[in-house]
Length: 263
Image 1 (cartoon, rainbow, N blue to C red):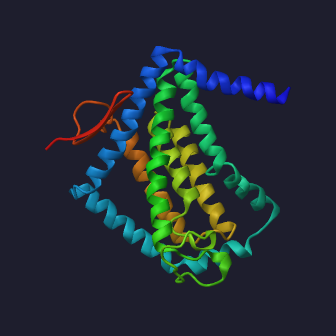
Image 2 (cartoon, rainbow, N blue to C red; image 1 turned 60 degrees about the vertical axis):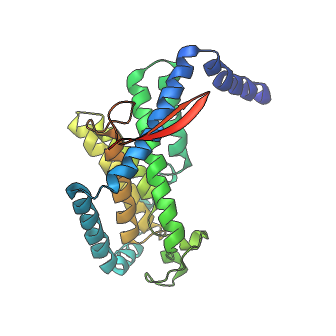
Image 3 (cartoon, rainbow, N blue to C red; image 1 turned 60 degrees about the horizontal axis):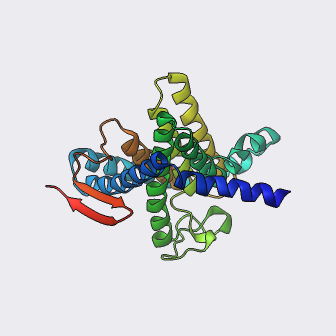
């Protein structure tokens, strides 16, 4: 019975969209939008305009400041373990984990299958934010190779080009994901309370990573900034990722694949 149910679900997920022309068109449009978001993000960052320079300089400052108190925050978290804190900071087992990826995929899938444009847009933006922010974070993790606090090798131990879990501390992947998602969600609501809740959840997860001795404070600052800036870029009303005015554009269809630039 379980096998039959799983097969039926798989059949619906794969076959139904392929037999619905509108859904197929929407998937093609959204895939183009996803590619264009990455192209625009790339070209925007390397344009070195005033905003990009200020954001980069500010990020370096906050990460460096966090680095100076890494040991203090590690020790503070270690001294404050309790049943209440254990329960509170268990949030990182859900938010920021694989469950979050399933959730945003489900959000997009719901909007796609039930023709809900608003939900579909939010789902796509969260996929773009997590996808590109995650790519940046994974690249930095593998290049920098910082040791995690639990290795007891110190905050200044680095093994570059190392993807062993113990040496992928910087930046924090959980912080990247939760700030990317929370920023997109916050940007899609005008309700101040919901905005506060979105960012409260993200900060709680960031704190949980320090509490669980999985990351240094500077790791979660870096991950949070990456997630926030990418999430804000893909969900900003001023960002154009669909076909239209853009500097860097991909286009895709079943019969063609290409890229274009405009100056």
